Image 1: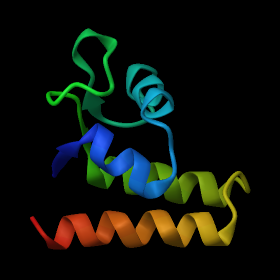
Image 2: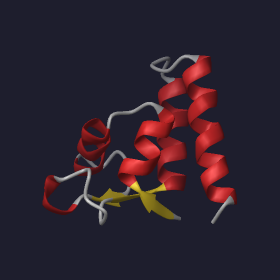
Image 3: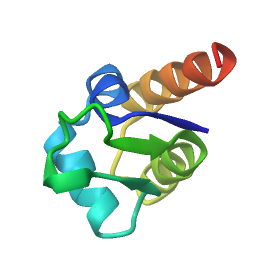
Image 4: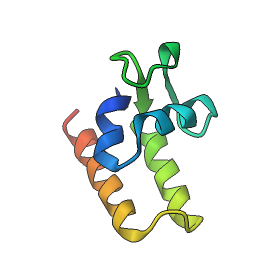
Length: 81
């Protein structure tokens, strides 16, 4: 399920530039045309993002509050599709 990168990035607390870097590095499935995370064509896969967030939590790099905030926004976006 695809969504606009710039839209979900701010909701879950990750700067769009950092999220674009994660896409380029292959950590999250998506596309960032012209390396512009603010582009309307820049997108990420929500399931891939959820897996990344869960992995970050398992590694101890994400606290509980940030984890639940991200998961809540991802689930809400998935439900509204």
